[in-house]
Image 1 (spheres, one colour):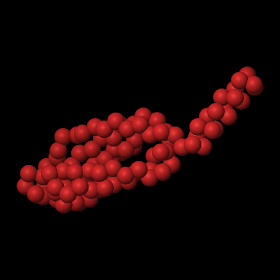
Image 2 (cartoon, rainbow, N blue to C red; image 1 turned 180 degrees about the horizontal axis):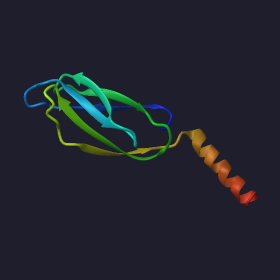
Image 3 (cartoon, one colour; image 1 turned 135 degrees about the vertical axis):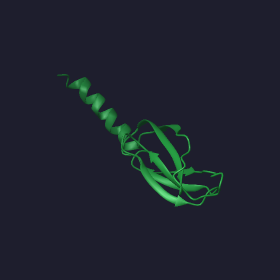
Image 4 (cartoon, rainbow, N blue to C red; image 1 turned 45 degrees about the vertical axis):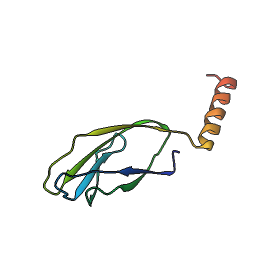
Length: 100
């Protein structure tokens, strides 16, 4: 849920067994670099989503010799926190009774 850390597991199997760093673009920001990590080892990484919505994560791995993987895209749906639903409902009710 938005406002909570969400864990994702990343994995890269480098053909030469070189260590890899992960370039992850979580939202519309610049990619964040994580690593280096051992090749062929699942790596859990967490991200704190600021608000609910639909997102696309982009991910690529780069080994210690600068060889890059293809970019992979993941579509994410981040649901609302319960209090966000409540606030949205209150805004809806407010708009009904106090139209501009």
